[in-house]
Length: 303
Ligand SMILES: NC(=O)c1ccc[n+]([C@@H]2O[C@H](COP(=O)([O-])OP(=O)(O)OC[C@H]3O[C@@H](n4cnc5c(N)ncnc54)[C@H](OP(=O)(O)O)[C@@H]3O)[C@@H](O)[C@H]2O)c1
Image (cartoon, protein in one colour):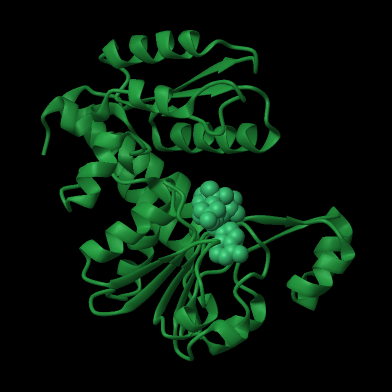
């Protein structure tokens, strides 16, 4: 079993993105600009937004954060999006999800100009992906494709099972794997016989949000396991069920550890697996920067 090291691949991509940013500045006098819009004060969202801003700064991307209280009316968010759609210095717009209850996320997503939709959540961009004409791809599945490519894992002809059907991860992932000629089964909470489906899968992408959900008996020997899940384990009982003993010291010290959707005992059966943390996570934020530069180049007509 070999680890798919997302941190290493992310660092390599960051280096390339940083060079591209320098080239855009030197040769074209353009600084890629990312606007992040956040409403409410969800601590997880704030931490994601902070890590996005930090990485943008590190890579020379101009990032702007617009924050609103949870009580913000949808019309006010829409007004800022309209402003950023029209701003030539903003090449990429991200609205941090989830939005406060009462704000229709689809109305907000559809307000973003498709050419500035850095998360590729707009129905136009998701439609293009389904047609295998994608221009911009959601960051998590895009990072997974880059991870597979880095390790020379070609999905063509593989039986791939994607567990989870969110529009952020599972659905675009399934479409992108099908576009790369995998035979894809998209699984969800109503799927019958999940374990049997997974036991036939040479490639599993788990995006469920339940710790240790994919147990060793569900895994085909020699499979590739990609773990998207981010689960905070805070209870000792859960730690004992889902986490390896080697993390116990860290658990006791911090009072919590992060674990994925794939049970650690499954790794021994796999040919390759992505760990949590250090797998898909670092790639997601990196692909956001890569998408920002890509959108900037498109808007400037640069190949
Ligand atoms: N590493 C990263 O960069 C990154 C990025 C995004 C998300 N995540 C993490 O990935 C996980 C999933 O996120 P998400 O936003 O895609 O999830 P989500 O919107 O919460 O969707 C979860 C999916 O899991 C399915 N599911 C739930 N219980 C199931 C069961 N018993 N059997 C089979 N499928 C089941 C649900 O099915 P139904 O549709 O039938 O309800 C749903 O499609 C979370 O832990 C999230 O924090 C990580």
